[in-house]
Image (cartoon, rainbow, N blue to C red; front, top):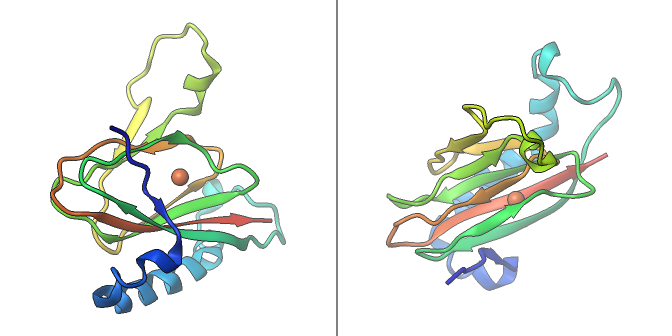
Amino acid sequence: MTRFGTTPMGLIARRLDSRLSLEDEAVRAILAVPHRLRALRPSEHFLREGERPKLDSLWVNVLEPGGTHSGHLHPHSVVSGTIYVAVPPGAGPLKLEDPRLSLMMAAPQRPGTFVYAEPKPGTIFLWESWLRHEVPAGNADEERISISFNYRL
Ligand SMILES: [Fe+2]
């Protein structure tokens, strides 16, 4: 059975009561994303001079044991990311997909077509919003809690 992990903020406030300080840190880290983007090396820049991304949305994901989040991207955004609040042992990684795969060409699959990023509590992952990603099922016994967000221009 597939369980989706997106939960409205108000419904999970009580679950996070013991993690409020970490949640506060997560929100601060999310608000610092534009600063992090400006600190990228020149070869990593993808925004044009003067473009300032604005926080568009954020939401909390509570992924129950055995839960997954199928492959998707974040339309109408430029930068997306997730910061992890609770990552129990065995929780699934974030799986990122080479965008050439969705073009369905006959080229052989290359090493690195999929990248598996293993988060820890406090980890923040950022990616350009067109990058398809998913959360495969893990074998954790507890909920995995994270906060995802989108920045737009
Ligand atoms: Fe996502």
